[in-house]
Image (cartoon, rainbow, N blue to C red):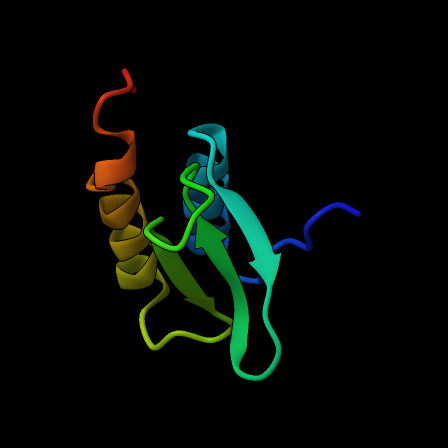
Length: 79
C-alpha cells in the first residue's frame, strides 16, 4: 500500500527526500501523520515524527531534512 501524500507540499518534499536516502514511513494513529525510520532496523535507529498540521510547515520540513542529514546510523554511507 503506497504512503498517502502529506497535505503540505514542503513536508511532502522533505519526506520524499528521506525516502530517497533509504528511510521508511510508518503510519501513526492520533495527532501524528506518520513516523520516518532510518535504515537501522533495531531499537537504536533514528526516528522522526511527522505531524499532520505543524505550526510552520517550512520549519517542520527543514527540521526533517536536518534530522535525516544528521542521522549517525548512515554516517558511513555516501549520500
